[in-house]
Length: 205
Ligand SMILES: Cc1cc2nc3c(=O)[nH]c(=O)nc-3n(C[C@H](O)[C@H](O)[C@H](O)COP(=O)(O)OP(=O)(O)OC[C@H]3O[C@@H](n4cnc5c(N)ncnc54)[C@H](O)[C@@H]3O)c2cc1C
View 1: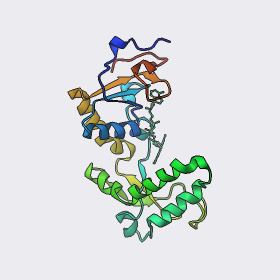
View 2: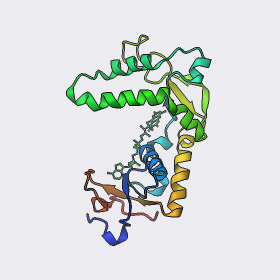
View 3: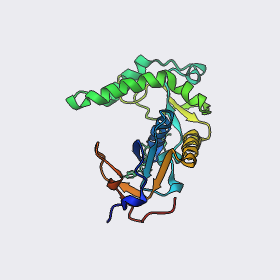
C-alpha cells in the first residue's frame, strides 16, 4: 500500500488529529479555540463522522448534578472517587497516569462539565440511568448511585455542537478533513506520510 503522495495532502497544519470520533472532534474543537490549524484524519468516510458516539445513547457521567439532587440521589466527588478507585484497583506503577486522569475527570464531572455542555446547548432527560451498576455499596465494583445522565437526542445531539463547529472550520480552511486515510501509530514525528489510503481506498470528502 502506498502512502498518500505528499502533493495531495495539505502539509500546513499546527496539529494532526487522528480520528473524527467524539474524542477527535472535541480535541479539534479545543484547538480551534486556541486558533490552531488542524488536519483531521479518519479511516472512515465523511458520513461516519462522530464514530461510535453517533450510535451511542449519549449517557454521560456527572457527579452531584441538579438532576440527581432533584431525584434525591445523594452524590459527591468523594463517593464517586471511592466508586471509581474501587472499580479500577489502581495498584501498579503504570497506574500513575490513569490515577491522575481519574482525579482530573472526577473534578471535571463534578464541576464544570455540566455547565460547559449546557452552554453548548446540550440538555438532559430528567431521569438518570444506572449503567455500570455495581454492588450497592461504594466499596464494590461499579456506581453505587445513578450517574448516567442521558442527553436529549442521545448520541447525535451530543455530537451536534462539535460537528457543527468543525464543519464551519472546514469551510473556512482552518480544518482540513481527510477521510478514508488510516494512520500508523503516532509518534512526535508523525506526519501525513504516516496516513495511508484505507483498504477501501480514498473517497471523495
Ligand atoms: C451502541 C453504543 C452505545 C454507546 N452508549 C454509550 C453511552 O450511553 N455512554 C457512554 O459514555 N458511552 C457509550 N458508548 C461508548 C462511546 O460511544 C465511545 O466510548 C466513544 O464514542 C468513543 O469515542 P472515541 O472518539 O474515543 O472513539 P471512536 O468513536 O471509536 O472514534 C475513533 C475514530 O478514529 C478512527 N480511527 C481509528 N483508528 C484509526 C487510524 N489508525 N487511522 C485513522 N483513523 C482511525 C475511527 O474510524 C473512528 O472514527 C456507546 C458505544 C456504542 C457503540
